[in-house]
Image 1: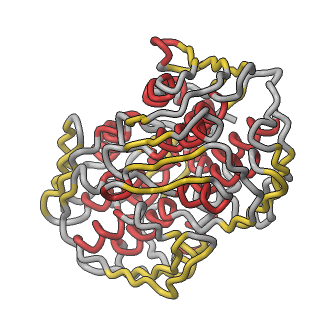
Image 2: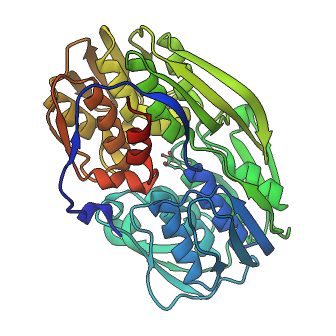
Length: 441
Ligand code: S3P
């Protein structure tokens, strides 16, 4: 299961080619996790149309199944059903809950399980997840009375959770993280009184939208939606969820389509929630030709088709303000910067250092191997763009978004490349390599 142990031979990434055609990216990863989790603790059946059939949501489903939740098989193109067990119906599992490579699974599970009074849980994951900081969730949950224990003073998995009756309170989160916020929202559903979570900046709001749709008593207020209050006691009811395509997966095609001469792509059914569209803001700043076609609302989330074609691009500069809206797109934007004449600046991105890998270090290392000129900073990078890249022996270093970003870079390099641990893409986009083969001319 763990991509970090994947040993398959390197994938050949030939230089050149253009990308032409239509592509439907798989379901949004964040919305997929949430639909499984909220469906599990609702009363009645939830159906999920468009659930992402990738390793990360499969980890969430496996954890829920081992606590007694019936979930139909997760297969591409199939509607998934979740038989909810109600807010207090999760059983104590007999084995550890394996979250695989998925930070979202582990962090949201912490919030969900902290309030299961009298039950005991152990959460673990692969080598990458065992190095990722969990205190950012455990600490705010502790102010509600949660008991989470683990290595490094409760910061690192494996983590033990002893379920408690939690106290409703006001909780400030240390970082603008939707994973942390969502963990607290899940915990507040069974607290003994109202809880308000206050974020330093607004992070993606899929949990707020979906919890409301499931019937939770939840209010969003404060400047830019940074204060979210939940009153416990409401009953969640199973819903029919439609998952839009993931803009973080669409990002690879958006950048590739804009960069690669002759390209012309339509990416269908992409989620355009404004807390996720920072990539479009930066591409606009670069002068990319992107059109939103057929904008619509699907099950409480804005959706559209995106048309992109190649054109001249300028370097960009962005920082902390936009970071929550494009945190997962920094690797592919670092590729884009290499192919624009002039310096691009990324700052306020220290969160990248605690993702599936240290994405600032890994992207700098891999792109430098291709001949890029990059200065890495504590919280970002400066990319001196416009130098031709050359084909190289590359490595995803087990990170799905790095694998897909390097695939785009390799098309524009002079000379062929190879990519070790390319299967990492399956964490969020299992059909990426097939889609690339199909679109490439
Ligand atoms: C996610 C939130 C983001 C993102 C991750 C998915 C989520 O992490 O990087 O891929 O589903 O809530 P943070 O909330 O830690 O920024």
